[in-house]
Image (cartoon, rainbow, N blue to C red):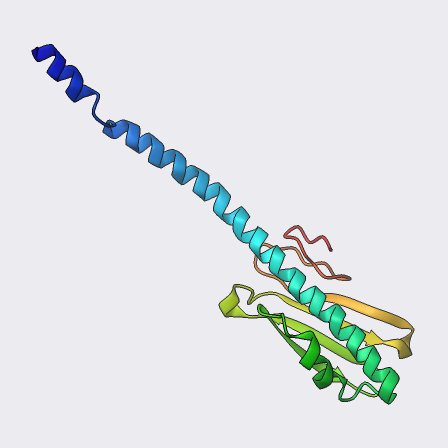
Length: 156
């Protein structure tokens, strides 16, 4: 009867070493998976900026067709194009009669503070769209002639 009590006691739960092994494995998996997941989330938010810039471009061209100038087009385009933009602020630092520049800057509170993209359209110099990445977080490579959408600097 005493042997049965010892066996019953020995089979109740986990030993400390088993628990430490499990905690170590979970910690290792979290250390590998969490940074990759964070990069994935940031990449998914970048689509918002590039889509907003493309939408703003179309609306600026519509404004030009109606008014023969880009001046005033940014304010008009923002009322329509920015309804679903949450992680970036959109601005027009350059807006003349014949050219414009639209910029998307990441919002720090949304985890996108280092990201900055721009779209410049200047038909007068013979170049249509100039897509540029003006800022990326530390550890990301930056492409010079397109919108960087991945950590390695490739374009989308």
